[in-house]
Length: 146
Ligand SMILES: [Zn+2]
Image 1: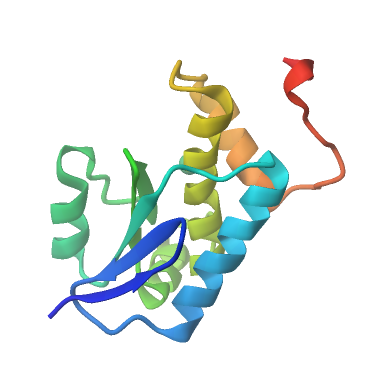
Image 2: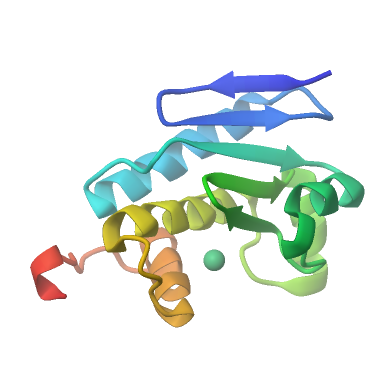
């Protein structure tokens, strides 16, 4: 069984469970937040929701990290389900909910659109993804500032 939810900018795919309304809303809000900040759309991408370690590992392939809650691969976000993220958070800390993790991962796809494929340093990509989604949003970064 495969469950799918498609929007204009992304498609949510779950091979294990039906996609809940919460997941749909968290994805939409995360997308809109990034869209406002970066003032553009991302390229179309897929969100693969995983509820088991085996599925998470399989989807991440060589980029598998047991500690990760989610990871952005090319045009694809692999993310643990909401319950699995809460479980992970107790052990590892960091973003504590599905909405925080999905918004952070989506930011990486907007960064590719914003900076291009030239590969910004990791501290900038990670810092900006957290800044957009948890930090103060008063500061507006414009392209001319770079
Ligand atoms: Zn990140």
